[in-house]
Image (tube, rainbow, N blue to C red; front, side):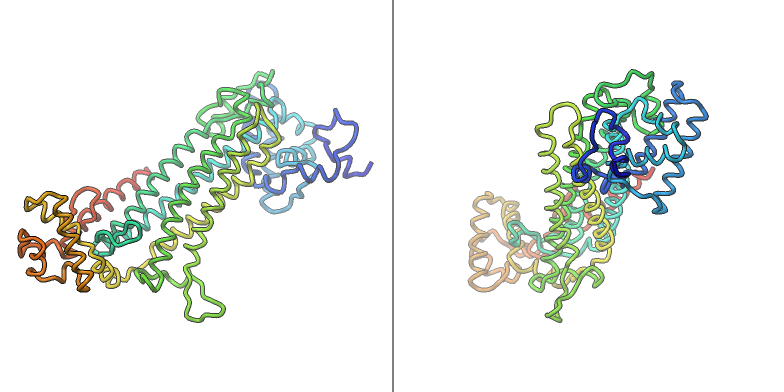
Length: 468
């Protein structure tokens, strides 16, 4: 038997009469991707060792050897000095084998009262908790950037759209605050996800618990979990927390994708509403005039990638019987890539958004076209006593006239407007101006500049409370 074959299955091969096929060993191994869990695996192992010492399974001398050995292994990994073994399958076996090499038979005692099933479930929860904390900080950073630009652009008028057709004038600051609200809900969903995943599966062992006198509450406390999970079968087989995270991540990416679509439109020559700094764009290898909004385009595309990972995890879990199955090895790569994609997209946006500058004159001119104050004229007639449906018809006829004469409502004379209704008086021009339109919507959630500035102030207060 070769030395490689002797290494194969050395952690669990007592029941087997022949080594695992070399291809099968590679096919079933997860070390190539789950090695990123090394810090969480070591933290969980150290908590488990301390708990075993507390209940009398490990002596103080054994505990010290295990803790110091694991610290040294973590340092080796971070220096890039460890050699990962496919034959040892995963991060758990690799670390345990390295520990046994270092401290001898005491290293083999570490696995008392646990299984790789509860071990990996614990590792992933620890990992995802750390990543959510970072992601939440990036969401906050992006929101802070949006607030800065929204405040700066509180008076900048642009067309608001429905069906991508000019609808009513709004302010650019108000539009950006809509993005802020999307992210506010994303922050809440991710925070809720973090609360639900913060339970420790450690001690559930393979599926039924263990006969050793373990203290699951103590090990949970050592890892800053809120407490132990309630059912051992569910503890090792559940991946709800990963699916929930991917669902929340899909919504974040959907929001970023919607923002991306608008940024791509607004930077086009046809809109020309904003300018993105060159450092967030690329050029063309053949067309020297091109400045492509690659960051928004790529983030828009990456939303599909994250949505796919959510479907992958849902499909992975949909037919699994209790408890643990090897299928669950396939949970990590979609989860890891979702985390990486979301972090990268949020970083790009948190860096890019504060650097956006508006082309206010172009925005204003676009808002002036397209009869964006038509609803204001209808509201004006209603305030004069006309039923809304009649007012709607009057304004529709005025718009048809404007299209025929190439005139916006605000460009028409009083005589021209009065041919559609004698109710219209000279004060109508107060509501047909763009400023009059946006200032009139001066209520909570409205587009009036004063309301935008008030919303920014309130939002800043909410963000400051997160750090308290």
